[in-house]
Length: 272
Image 1 (cartoon, rainbow, N blue to C red):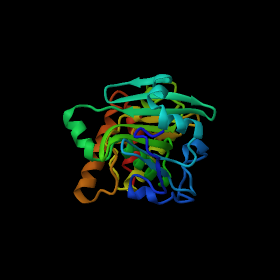
Image 2 (tube, helix red, strand yellow; image 1 turned 45 degrees about the horizontal axis):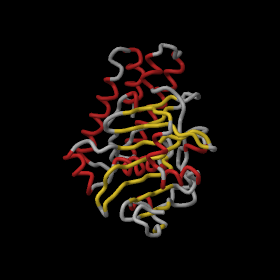
Image 3 (cartoon, one colour; image 1 turned 90 degrees about the horizontal axis):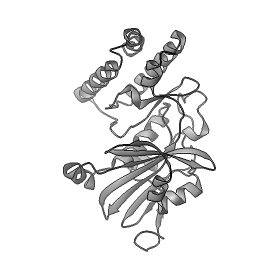
């Protein structure tokens, strides 16, 4: 039963106007050999369920059994999962299901001002949902968003949750810090990042958190972006130029202790 005891209202559109459009069936440059769990449905739009206290948007391919628990037992689902990160701002767990592992995030209220702002604006989970869909449609790699939930009091938003595909692998920082990467592997990762950088430019996007821990290196040395709640797309003019400069500077600060790695990434970023 919904939290307010009334039947759920199921709509054929999503939280954001951009989500009312189904993803394009053939992105211009889809990630090479992307696993099915990393790609959203190409044929059916997301579904929204709204009550007075809850708003949920989910992809048609979200596992039904996991979706039921996401809808009705969200806190027990969190409590019974493997903890990946227990932070003040975000709790991240790995959830096991018959279909495989998934990642569940809870975005916590951070303080009076932050909470007051997000009471009326889009939640962090909703930003991640929106931005991940845009990134995937642009042919860039990010774990597919499967469901987004906001706890509400009418139009006011409180905690928010995001269910997404799981991508195994170390962060880019851990991968480089291990010292085990061969020069050819580093070159390939630099090429991957160059493609991401150009793709973000085509979206007129600001990533806003270019820490090397926000990129995952998978077993095939593909590079995946994560934590997209700070991303904004469609920027123009001086705002876009400032955003690109800020993103570049933040990303290059990751490699102050590895000048040879910095040179590889710099060459791809500075190439038109």
